[in-house]
Structure formats: structure tokens, C-alpha cells
Length: 219
Length: 285
Image 1: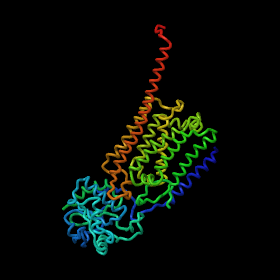
Image 2: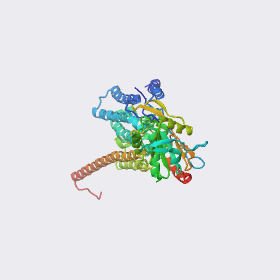
Image 3: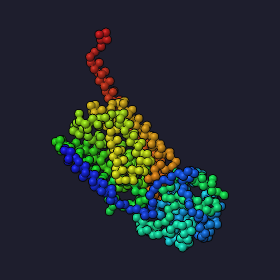
């Protein structure tokens, strides 16, 4: 076989590959960010320090048993990891919560040492039962909260975070995808926001930072 | 319908049971089967149906684990399926392809004295093949490699191609029977396979016993179901590599050893018969 023919065949084989690789598209969740690990800061932390001062939002939400829960009062006294999400979320929420739950278990950290709080941004679908069931996949000790959208937006606003937005249909056919902040916010025992962990934080990162939260942020 | 060239990880893309054909898989499969048949036709040789079945089975194994859904699941969502793909390409497809090539076709594809044969001969020398196979095994299962290459279709294709080529080079001396092609004989062949099975335990053990997810690709992929645990998935992947890969190797080792034992017995019996037929041996001469 001549070299020219071989080359033409190779080009014929590779060209559609390159074209397809460049053009192909698969169903995607618009809430997802690129997955990357965190880099360690000079102080050893992996969570990103906050440059602005923010505190636990002064809002009243409801627990999964519909008990009023005053966020900035009830969470003070113990370090808290706060996350806004929704139970139908296909990626960020289950990944974050699974990573935290697993790291808590691995570091033998109790939920009374670090509180993990999930606030629903999807009051239409997230009933108290549904939130409880969702969190049950990770840990029964996580605190699930819900409330009117206006209250949730007020909480997000106090933290300089954008409110939830409907992003279009879920490719799995489970209603709409909702865009929401993808980071977990860490508050110390005094209720001051100290660090955030964006989506892409891996279990190994949490295993290192959770003991630091207990050691340095407890009252 | 979405179309892609090759399966790859797509960080942030939610898994759906919507068919996504991978055209590269169809093109590569057609090229492999077409090339095999064409080689027979241009040589004027009839196709040995037994060998053709092996060839088609080898190609089918590659296609099955590279096409949707296994290809997509293994490249971006489940480490277990990722290892299943590796095991299928390395321990099923590659030996079937090697065993499907008759000697005359090997002579045609790799004529003695050509640069092509010189390169293949060097790559399939058993120490080189053992080193190459394990270098690819270790290198392509490093977290950095998986997380960097598998998110691109061409990168994922390159990893799969490296698995197949390394496996072909590695199986070649163990499966071919032509002495002038570097075929190994027992017991060296058994040692060669045994050494590989031992080395394979290293990455498999890392997968099975690591308390943390090694690969960001699988850890941060949208979960297929709630409560999915990437560590359990990884542990299962390690067990799969050990059990299925190990089982395949030990089966080949056992069969080879049994055949060798039978051949030795037959040779001994023939020698005894020959001695008995020629009468007492004059040991003083």
C-alpha cells in the first residue's frame, strides 16, 4: 500500500473523530461547575477563606418536623457547615452531602461537634418528608430546613449569595433544574462565616479540614 | 440524538438512559473485521471460520465495553465499569485477537526482516512486554492520568488504545506458538504470566483498600443513584481487577501447565518406547 493511500485513510479515520470530539454534546446539568480539587493554603486549610465579614443569617426557617428554627440563634455555639440546595439536584447537592457525611464518619466527628445544615431552595418540591428522606441517604443527623422562597432568598441575600433560578428541564425528566450556590459555607461557633468549600471539594479535602473546624472554630 | 466519537467522562453531565452512539467504536470495529477479511481475500486464502469467530469475538468484546452504555458509564461514572472495560479489553479481547491470527497472516502482516517486524519483535520480547504491560497498567490507572485524559474523547480513546496495544504485546509471546516469533515455552511462560498476575495485585489492592476515592472523575460525577458511595465503587473495581483478571491469568497458566505436563509425559513415554524398542543400551561405548 502506498504511503499516500495510508495517509489518506488515516486522515479519513481521524478527521471525523476530531470533528465529533469537538462538536458532540451530551445532556448536562447547568448547575454543575468544573470539578477540581482545592489547593492547600499556607495555614494548611483547603477551604477558601472569606475576605468579607458575614454572620449566620437572621431568618426563621422550619425543620423537617415543621418546628420554627431561628438560624442565627439555634446554630450558634457549635461550628456549622451550611449548604443551600434541593433534593432533586442531580449532582452538586448529593455529591457535597455524601462527601461531608463520609468525611465526618472517617474523622469520627460527631454532628454535635460540627453541625451540617441543608436549606432547601425548592419549596415547591421539597416537602419536609422529602427533605428528611433525601438527607437520610447521607446521615440522619444532618439538619434539614425549609421555608418560603422569600425567607430563603433573604438568607441567601444576607450572605451575598444569589437566589435560586430555574434553569430548564432536568435531562432525567424529573422537573426543572434549579441553579443555586454551589459552595458550602463554614461558620465558627460564634456564628461568623470563615471559609467556603466550592463544588469540586473532594472527600480527602474534607477529611483534612473537618478536624481543623473542630479544633479551631469550637467555642 | 447525541453522537460522540468515543466514550469519555463529562464532569457535571447528568447520566440519562438516552442512547448516545460512539461512532469511533463502529468505525474501529468495522476496520478491524474488514481488514481481517480483506487480508484473506487479497492473499487468496479461505477464511477459517473458527479463527474468524475468535477475531469477531475479540472485536465484539472491545465494542461492547466501549459503546453506550458500558463505555459511557465506565469512562465517566463508575470505576467498577471502568475496570470491567480494562479487564475485557486486556483479558478477553486481546488474547482472542492474538489467537485468531494464523501463522501465514502473521507472516503477511509482519514479514521477517522488515522494520515493522523488528519493532514488534522488540516490543514482544518477554521482559520488554512484561515491562510495557505493567507500565501501561500502572500509568493509566494513576489518578492524574484518569482525571486528566478520560475527560476528553481523544484522551479516553488513547487510554483504551494503549490498553489494547500493551495487552497485544504482552499476550503475544505467551500465546503464539511460532518459535521464530519469540513464543515462550513452559515453564518460562507460566512464570511470565504469574509475574504479571502478581504485579496486577498492586493497583488492584490500592483500589480495594484506599479509604478515600482516588479518582476525582468518579467521585465528582453526578451519582447514578442517591446514596452512591464512590469508595464502595472503587473497592468493587479493585476486587474485579483482582478476581476476574487474576482468574483469567491463572486459567491460562493452569491450561498451559497441564498441556506442558501432558506433552512431557508423551515425550517420556515415547523415549521409553524408543529405548525398549532398541534393546539394552551399551553404556561402555
